[in-house]
Image (cartoon, rainbow, N blue to C red; front, side, top):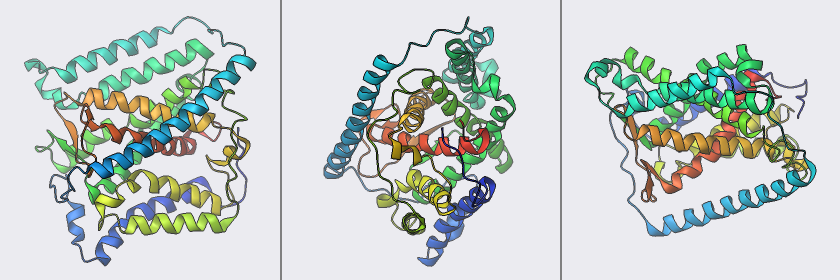
Length: 370
């Protein structure tokens, strides 16, 4: 567990600064390169104006190698952690019966899945609004699993703050929707008839489940000895100290964001990397610890549980999306092939850094002892 230094910017201050940079930098870059900034302000965002590069076998091969290397590194850490947890940690015993509201969550999840994938005439008015139903059930189910395994969960032991995750999650994902305006890697179907206000309400309802789902899944993973202790004391990384490296990371991220609309096919990964780099750079510049600070002592549990939680949720996002009435499709340059549901196979790698961004956002709401 990391304690936050008392000096430097407060959490709300650097989050507001980070939000300002994420909004201003892409738009400023577009304006400086002569693009019509009004293109990016269309709402609801229905026009497709980015023409992506076609599939390229060389880029696909290179990205495959990078993903295999990343996956191999994660697998190696998990194997080390498994050996340590089996050797040193006592098995966690169940703390009681599975809560009744967990079974309710399972029923809501399955019913929501059924309603999302079917087209019952009597349900036609609500058909486009079903996406949050399976996720509401999922969140209840996973928190019930946490209570069953450890006796506590985010929902039951941080109830007030956990409920605050829902509006925070909607705001959180709207930032990614904004960044996507400049690269257009995903777009929505079945939303053409919405007014601007209707679109905001419809989308925010779905977006509000993102952080609760990922962080609840992370909490469930942390009930296992592998993640709660087994991944401590492994390979240490000597992260650079001081404001200079943090400033360098900030400048590189800022430059990339300014150019994201000019070179969307090359810089689209920054949609997932830049917010994390900007926030952690600001934290480091303010003298605060970051989610990466534990790597200096070889503590990988918090990061890997967050990344894998997002990957798990990503699978269900793509699964439940594929046959929904209101859904999304992808347009990924160079590697748009080998789909699992609508997502290209290599696109699932983006869920790993996204999980770290969920961890950063979650710490703002739930506290640094998340």
